[in-house]
Image (cartoon, rainbow, N blue to C red; front, top):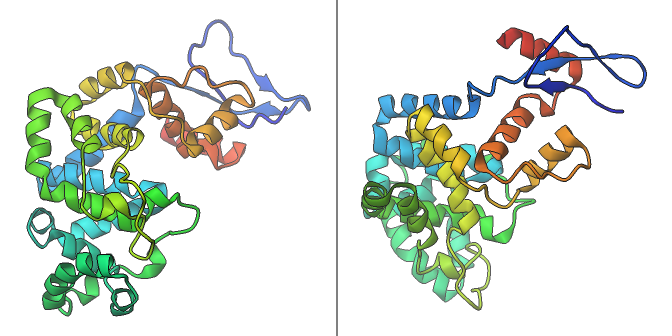
Amino acid sequence: MNTRLHFFIHAEGPVAFARSCENRNIPQAQLLVENPSAPIHKHAAYLSASRLHGEDAALFFGIAAGLGYKNNAIPFLLAAQRAGWKTARGEDGEAMLFGISGFLEPRDFDDSDEITKTYLMPLWDSWWKVRDAFSRSVLPRSLWRFSGIRPSNHPHRRLGALATVGRNFSLLQKQIREIGEKGFLHFFEELEHPYWTRHWNLSADPLEKPLALVGSDRATDLLLNAYLPSLSPEAAEKRLRAIRGPQPSGILERASVWLCGDAPPVFLKSAWEQQGLLQLYRDFGSIGAEEAWTKIQGAA
């Protein structure tokens, strides 16, 4: 038995101690399910961004981090913030996002095919005018992660999606006002880009068929991690319990094995269950039992 930490919800009767096969004490932690931490933490982050940049910008920055996935959430957020909310919505938004991300390099342009050059030319014309002024804002290449990423999730392609979101943000707002979360999902599932719906990255050959810029699972993930945190914790909890979660990702499968072993994750159908497990895994999954116990006591 390789249990490192024992979670429980209800404590009834006398205090019980969890022991391993070797009779070693296993640290225990009670989960307060009536006080959901994930919605509260994410809502607090949204409120902080709202106070600094405004509600619309906070939502856009949340979408940026979500499109960056776990490997590139930080550089995506930095690119969005450094480009600026107003600029990201304007005609030069795509050029600024790609320029500040460090994805507009002369050698890349020279080595591109004609289709890619046609796409990059207006971006270059715009970025070239402000390149020197923003030279200190350009993200270092070492900040980006390209390995271990599915082609459809390449940072070039997702940055093109983010630029498209900024350019069409008023439509996103309209659909949210009219039909709430359904409008949010519909917006992303219908999102298109003349170049990026047919390319993986700036150096790849064109795809034979167009591919959704943001698939349904990613749209649901953005709903959970960018849109719902903009609601009150109570409203977010209610929606999380009602929404079916996306197809389990690699990190969710690892979290399930970490908590349940080889048992089938039959309880991971709702977004609420998935988000709860991910929160546990992020808080305690990569640390040892003693460290986890110390962390739990410090949060008590």
